[in-house]
View 1 (cartoon, rainbow, N blue to C red):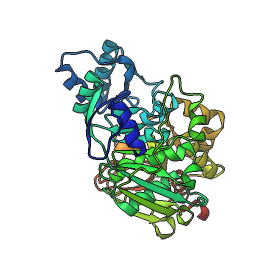
View 2 (cartoon, one colour; view 1 turned 120 degrees about the horizontal axis):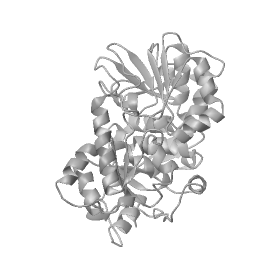
View 3 (cartoon, one colour; view 1 turned 180 degrees about the vertical axis):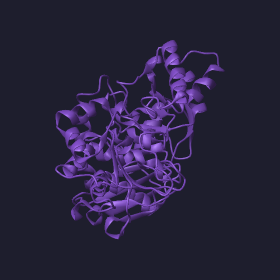
View 4 (cartoon, rainbow, N blue to C red; view 1 turned 120 degrees about the vertical axis):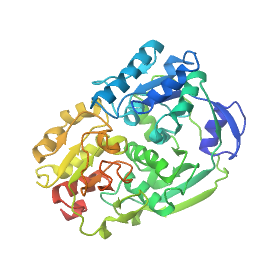
Length: 416
C-alpha cells in the first residue's frame, strides 16, 4: 500500500512498490532553474561536455530580477539566454516571463503524476496539481539536465486533514501558516506532506498552490494534493499533453497524521524571523508597518489580486506605507487590467508592476531599510530576507496585507 508520493516515485523508478527510506533512481519529467540558480548549474553542466538529455524537458525562467536590476543580474541572464539558445531549451524572456511557480502550472508545462525538479526550494508548489515536485541544488540540477535522472531517498509521508468550513478572510495561506506554527519549520523534515479533508476539497486551486508552495517552510521534500474535479477543471484549458493521475491507497502507511478543525482558524500572521512564529490576527497587537507587499509565487495569482482589490477599492493606502502589488504572470497582469483591478490599486496609491520575485528575496522592487517593518504575502521572513538585517517581515494573507496597507498597522480586514 502506497501514499501519493510513493505511487508517483514508484512509477518513475520502474518499481512496483517503493517505501519510505528506499533509495531510488528516478526519471524526471521537467528540470527547471532560474536566474539566481541556473548560472551555477550551467557552469557545472559544461564540465560534463555533453548535451542536455531532452531540450523539451528543461526550462529556464529568469524571474528573480525581472527586468534586470543591475549589471550582475544582466550578466546572469545573458549566460542563461545563450545556453538556452545553444541547447534549444525553454527560456522565457522579459515580457513573456512570469514567476516560475505561477507560470509553469498556468501554461500547462507541469502536470499531475509527474516528477519535477527545480533549482529553487519552492518547486514544491506543483504538488497542488498532484505532481511530485521538489527543489534541488544547482549541481544536482546540472546532473539532471545531463541524464534526466535523479537519485533520492523516498520520503516518509505525513498526512494533514482539515475539517470544517473556513471563516471569512481565511485562506490557504492561513492553513499553511497555522500548520507550520503547529509543527515547526522542521516538523516535516524530508517528508512529503499530503493535504486532505473536506476543507481542502472546498479550497480553490489558488489556495492549494499557496499551501504546496510553503511545504518547504516546514522542512518538507514535497507537498501534495489529490487530483479532483477542481484540479481537472483547472487543467482542462491548459494541459497540452497526456498525464496520469495517481491516487493514494486507502490503507497507505503514514509516518504521522494531523487532524485540525479549520473552522477554529482565524487569519494568521507569522512574526519575525520564522514562518513558524505565528499568531492569530486577534493576538497581533499594535504593529505599525512601512511596507505591504502583495504577490510572489505564494500569493500572486488572480484570486489573490481580487481579494486585495476588494479591500482597497475606494480607499487609500496609508501615507506612511508603501504598498507594492506584483502579479504572478503577464496573463494575470492582463486579466487584472481587464477587470479594473489595476485601476483600483493605482487609485488607492499602490504600485503595480511587472511579474517578479524581486522583493521576496530582497532583490529589488521593495527593499527594506534598517528599522523598517513590512507585511508580506511572500513565504519567508528570515533575518534580512527583504533587505536590511535590521528590518522585520511579517507574513500574512492578501486580505490582511491589503487591510494593513490602509490602516498603517497590521489589522484584520474586519477592523477596517
